[in-house]
Image (cartoon, rainbow, N blue to C red; front, top):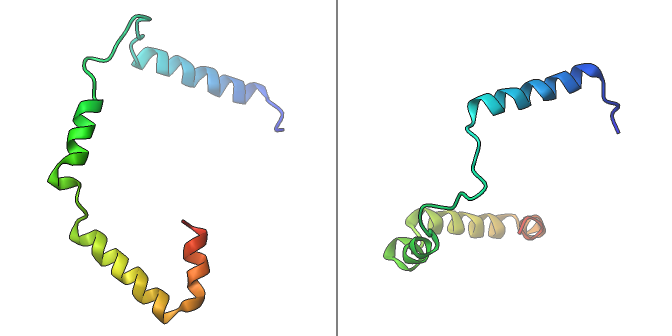
Amino acid sequence: MKPRNRETENDQEGCADLLRKVLPPVPQDAEAGRDLWPAVLARMQSAHADSHWFDRVLLAALIVLMVIFPTSISLFLYYL
């Protein structure tokens, strides 16, 4: 572990002071203005949630690369 020195502690204190000055305090009883989950569900079920042409082009390019370079399949599977 890196030893802490005064300069690092001063930097952290300075950053904390700046954040306190810039960001207003959040009250303890603060709640969200509205529930966002119904909007997320509606968007997921809308027609816009369907895959776009760009997604299909990327998938086709990936398949072509796998056909040209079969040894790269393990690399692609690793990153999934």
